[in-house]
Length: 112
Image (cartoon, rainbow, N blue to C red; front, side, top):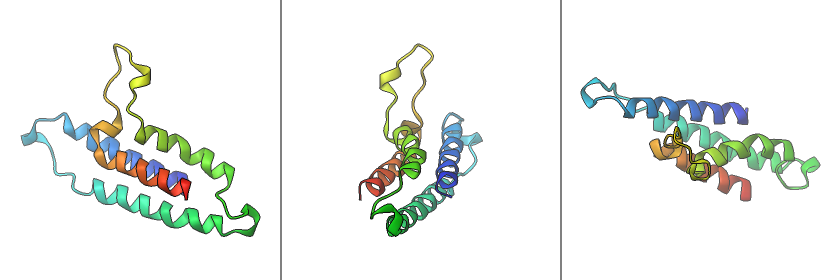
């Protein structure tokens, strides 16, 4: 469930980034992107503490869950500057500030 929420938020951010490059008169209104990303962040923020309450996890988030979530955190919070190439484009976090905020929320959820 957590991975699907992350994928849903990333897809919404990609849709938002595709619309940024269009001429404003040809750009359809995409007001729901922020709501989708916020909803996914809320589900994850509620789900991770529930997993930590499981007695088998000793009060922490399980390692397989962290392995699934960490790539999304790095994608959202990273600026992509470590892999500069001629064909490199701006990262999704730069194009969609909501996606970067999503990464920050995930980082906080992981550290708690």
